[in-house]
Length: 201
View 1 (cartoon, helix red, strand yellow):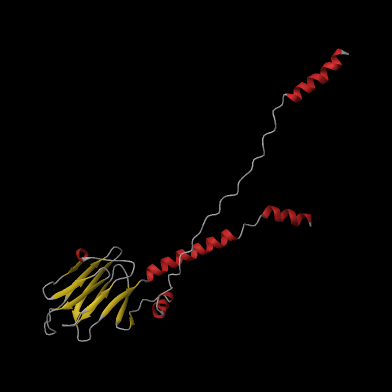
View 2 (cartoon, rainbow, N blue to C red):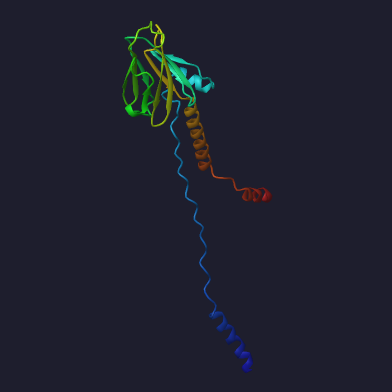
């Protein structure tokens, strides 16, 4: 009889000594990655420049008095000048230069004025001088320009560049950001849950 009373008592003591159940593990949802979509690099470009880049062509274009060259890091360009006339060489809005980063080969018969985003050159000789040819190097905080300056009666009042490679690179980055933003706004499909629902039907 004593043994029969002792067994329930031991059972009750064992139950009372068990540790409490651990709290449920709550897995926090990962924070959503904030995706910034860059601006469209084609915005602000002239129709001719936009069409040239989209068609993967690199022609020399004209915009009023300005000649537009397609920029490439390893290219050089010929600029036609005229005595008693100045030619403006325009840099892109995202770069600048100074007097220490512009070098002309013939500084005796050519003069130049250097601004932060433009360089003006003018030949001091006459069109009869067959040797009135020199080179000009403009180094900016982003690019380098190698130019040949020559004389011609029909001169270029202004020259500048458009930048196909830069635009294409920015456009690729924009398209990647757009795809990532679309994936983030569309939650992934739960294949396991879908299979369970299909099986129950």
